[in-house]
Image (cartoon, rainbow, N blue to C red; front, side, top):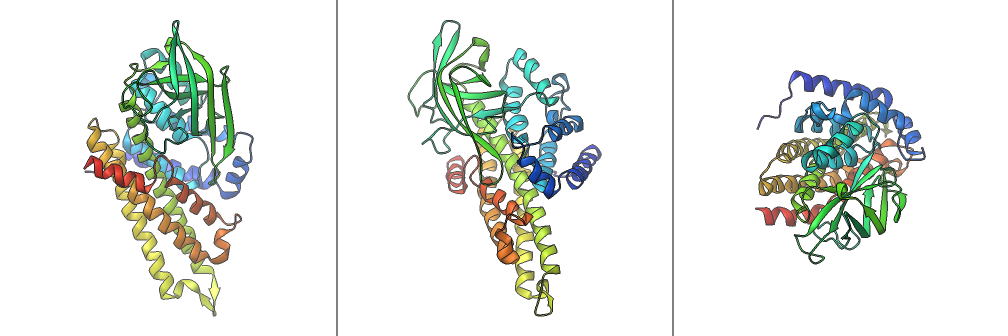
Length: 377
């Protein structure tokens, strides 16, 4: 498989790298996190101007017609800068799902708005007690006239309190663990009966828990075919997992660079600690882990677009399990090499290590994806 980038993609990478260096400094990120919504609307507007928010949408939908390579470049840059803006839930997952399964009217109404930075979106697939199994859906959607009434709970919805639209999975038939009978609905922010509990995650991002009590939606809120949404949910989630893998690579790259710079300058016994052989071995281990993860992430992003569900699952879960394991090793080595300073919030390394650790738990942890990989083999 060819992982080389063409000239346009190289220019995109350069512009993203310049943006992160210039506008996404550590101090700026702290200021963005402290804003009411946990991210900067001004930065989100800049993303729209750069074309990032419509990167993978068709030109008819206000996008640039990009694919897996563009997702890799965008998410790696997001990892480099520890970007807190809701790119993953809005563009990759919700936007990608609507682009894949939405009606013409839904695409026309939502995708250009996302590309222009005027609409934040998210997905609500996980439920309390459901772990990472996407088919464990207790939330129900009962027909009521021309529409549906939704009741249930959703957990850890990324930027759920900030989203203008949330794609909610709900059961229109079958039991709580059946693979059939699951449907998808668009729920608007502020819908009567929707309770949203917003909170900050350990890595500085935002998430929310949802309670839906007699939330009414029209027939036009249904995405795709009623009762047959699980394959669409799995495909959207796999795209999100692959994107997270690419982000993890960006986090590792910057964390490695910060650690290398630290051991070059930190003096002990009259010399930089980077001259000690044990430090050199650890730095080499961190570099090797990051390079191996890059290959796995690239493969996952390419396979995430596959129509072969088994092939896609195999590659994506292999990457997520491997990168989750390596990410923890890189984070722990970086903290050890920074010494006591490595766990303080004043040092960027601590924030990168937290993000790497939390990525392992997003959309399925290492153990879950090892089991999923085995089942798909």
